[in-house]
Length: 143
Image (cartoon, rainbow, N blue to C red):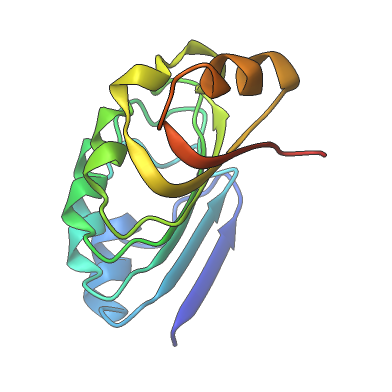
């Protein structure tokens, strides 16, 4: 299996560590309504992961995403996450959907010259566009 999408508030048996043990060659992981997800640390075990979607109301840190060096697509919607500076370390990232916490994040903290960043609304897009060299493109998600 190369792609996995999980939707729902119930953790799969064994959680993320078990998924990583059983599916080490996973390239796409989509976690929707994943309020069971509170620790992203095992994400580094997915050595081939290049697409990640995280939607969780309980996840408060994405620091472990730095352990996924091949990530090219990242869709983040986690209102409890305040620090996304680690995203600037993802050198292969081409597309970033930053739903939450886009409005609260200082775009100066990130430098993603080769990345297209999708943000949730026009005011956020305008704020991000004011930072020269911030990203290849800034787009509003629903435009």
